[in-house]
Image (cartoon, rainbow, N blue to C red):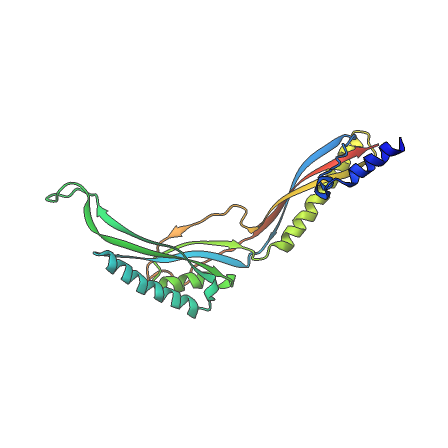
Length: 243
């Protein structure tokens, strides 16, 4: 018997380390388990506004449309830099060139689409870090030649503190609910078994994008109301109910 045990011990010792590392132990929970999904949000004033802007130009040839657009876009970028917007906060988001046609039927004109030239556009995404100057910045873009503006979208650059607050509130709420179920069901305590989380931070609760075209004679100051943005955390937690 001793020799057999010795051989068994030798066989175990000879197993590769990788094979031993694959061993896992799962302990089944015998107590009733309550699963809760809890979402908590925290609101705060935004400190960043993101705006889409750009220039559209038309010409009879593709080259002329692109050259005219390049010159006007450079003027717009220079105006943004002069307004104190850092280069890292200005990003090209799209360049487009397309042929334009007139589909209307006019007396004396041949039927079907009529080629009228090319349209070029260069779109920029601009991050504005001074919320109080967003309206003035939009007006400056228009004055510099911008033909379209999208946004603004408000956010918080570092939502970590808000997410932390929302996380604490969600866990506190989950514990209160679990304790209620434990007492209502005749159990002594609710013991935390597992937590999983999903979160979103520093964004508008219901993002809304507005698009508009502006003329050079727009109102002197564009009113902007940043409102509040929120960070939210959703926890899926499980509590075992103990006697």
